[in-house]
View 1 (cartoon, rainbow, N blue to C red):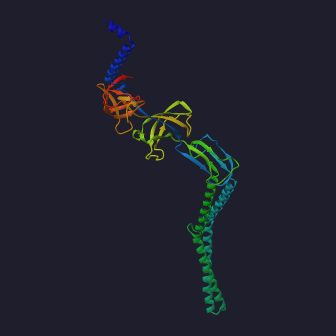
View 2 (view 1 turned 90 degrees about the vertical axis):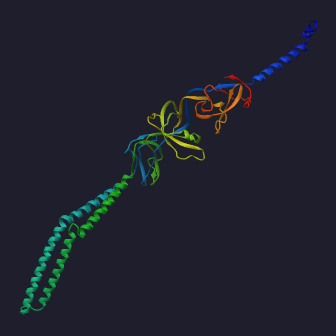
Length: 405
């Protein structure tokens, strides 16, 4: 008993006891395994979204250019202004073109009068001239017959016979000329064809003059909004010089570049919620209407366009927008926090599950990925306990002590 009391009074005794207890505790803890944080596979509704920044796309951007050279006398629009079909955009000095139109109109009237004259007067005059020529030929023929008889009877000298024959030849030529003139004066005669050709020529000249006059007045061919203006009154413009840029009215579209890794998730008709960065409180719906058939090799992206059925009034061309595109959803999916899935971007993702107090590697098949959660399609059962990586190295097969989060 005295010996025991002596031992209890010695510090070395208690130090030895503490060492023994510490070793025993360490052995016990080691037998229980490394402490690890764990979570469980649970079922819940899950959605996968593609979030991106894009822009309001202008489907039809029209460059309004001058078609003729001249001095600009008026510009009817400013940047940002709405225009309707037929609205005057730019007026070029048209005095020279108006004078050319007036000159061409006068030439057309003159040619019309010539055709009219041939149709109404020329044919009558030609017919009358033919009748007179035929009558003159008949008189000359009768005079020749009488002269031949008189010369045969020696009643007149022989020179009269030559004069009569000459008069007959002249009458015959006059009759032939009158016949030709009558044929020319007919509706399809040479004179009529010449007159009609002249009329068509001056009509073409009038049409050209009217076209050149119309080119001095530049109007909107469709409804839209003026994006840019690079002309002022007093400028001298040249053909093909761009004066205005117009965004023609069409369905409003949003465009963004999606990472090519998301290509398999994109489908036509998927819905998105979007908002302009300038007006984040105005959220509106959009639908995927176009997915580019090729990948941008420089950026590894694919162009996606969304149509907006009811765009907000504040939406402007080329405005920056934020897009939240719903690409997949699952009801009561089996999910785990995304950070517990190892090698998730490889062909064989896996997790460390806790089974029977040991860490067990389980290869899993992944589904959609939501906000911080990943769907487990195969490889785990509901309620399975999985180790959360926290920097502590745990090898498959090692004993572990689960500490649920």
